[in-house]
Length: 87
Image 1 (tube, one colour):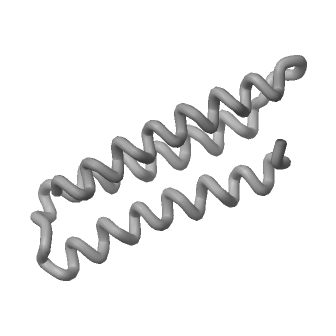
Image 2: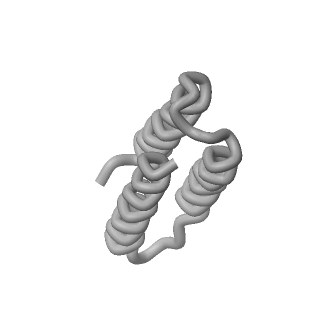
């Protein structure tokens, strides 16, 4: 199990990459800005939500908590990636 600091860095890197993809698509004119703005807002909300959840881990079942957190994060990142592709 990675420590909290590393996990936060991984989340930040992943969400930053998704956000950068949105910005690049918007600048290249390959996608409409109206479609990208809600996706970008969701990416920021995802980052804030998961960093806050990591900061408030309850004692006792850390392994289960982090496993569930990673699975949920991966699913949401996958869904956001699909939305970026469709935009």
